[in-house]
Image (cartoon, rainbow, N blue to C red; front, side):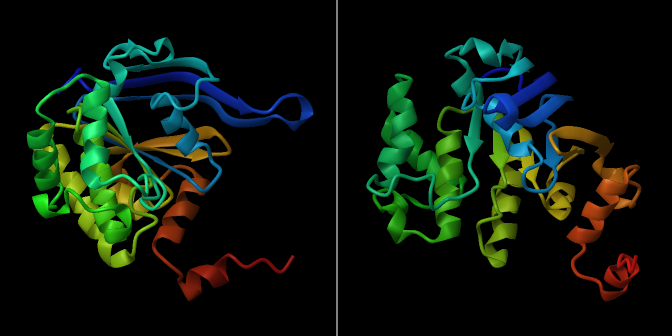
Length: 262
């Protein structure tokens, strides 16, 4: 495993477009994640949380501020960064190449970084995510959504990173499969001492997986809190309270109390 797994973001800002058409997607975001901690970024679609993750993964290079992973400057493009932090994407149907076998998908990061013993490493990664060697030469269209996401997680583990960046890793899956993937991630974190930065719109997922969280709205962090306080129903901001109510599902009494006849 590479690096200590710490993550630090300071005054991060991201704009898309120019002039009057520019969208200020992330506005002065700051937070830090300790080694081995699981930290959540939560908010509605369009709140900027996934954009933060893409900056840390090196997928968005047009931003201002500072961001470090294990003390390395993300903006530097240091070749050690991919071996320290890896990303798992939201949609397992889009993140795997349809014409590549599982074996090729998992072996590719090893080839890029000049790491040998690919056969053994691929089989070990499949076992770690609950898939046996029998899945090694299957294609994505021969896998269920949950199996595809397990392969995506295995791919992220191939370089033995210390940080996993998780972008809504269960939202595209059937409800019956979501808990299995969350439990897998929870086990991997415990066994490998991973730092996790988890993006979700679902506070219930964050409460299950994380130690602390930051709530984002319109590109900015409006509240940061411990998950223990969230579970006690003690958010400070009205926006966080609304998210909490939404995560509890539809409640007729709650809905009625929020109706305005003005």
